Amino acid sequence: MKRKNKWTTSIIIFGMMAILFGAYYGYTALNFGQGKSATGGGSEAGASEQVAQFKDGESNKGYKNVGVFIADFHEKYNKSLGWGGIDSVKWTDQKKIAGDILALMASVQTDNKALQTDFESISTYAKQVESGAKDKQILLKLHRYFHDLDVEFNRYKDTKDYYDVTEYKS
Image 1 (cartoon, one colour):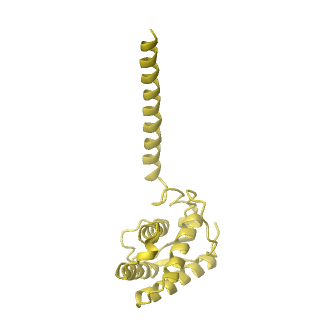
Image 2: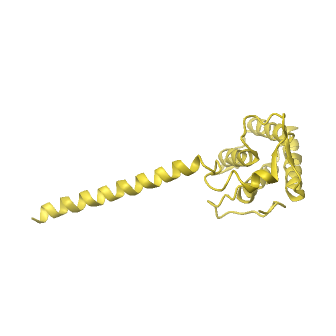
Image 3: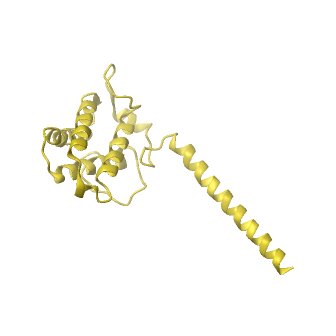
């Protein structure tokens, strides 16, 4: 009888774990496609879309909105500089990222002075990298701007890090 109880208990525990994992992954998959930033949290739509948008008729390189652009470059910097990547920078990759940022920044419009200041700072740093500056501090600043804008603009909350480098606050 004890052996049957162990099997029953094991099956119940396994079933509950399967349900929990399925619910978690289902919830994550549904929310990723509906208003989450590419980095995992926050809102890519709503109030932020009214603060900044791509100019009509300008190339936005396929980005749905400015929030997605911010989240995508935050992720690019996470992948290329995070987890020790800053110690082995691939400068040709960073020059391309900087060029992409500058191309997109040319088509972003905002009336928000704080956000405009942040975009100008990002553009200044990106121009330095694109022109060949090999300064890791510039890359860290770019990464921190995109990180904090993802937190503020997209309301990305899946982080404990916040560098407080942006003028824009949501």
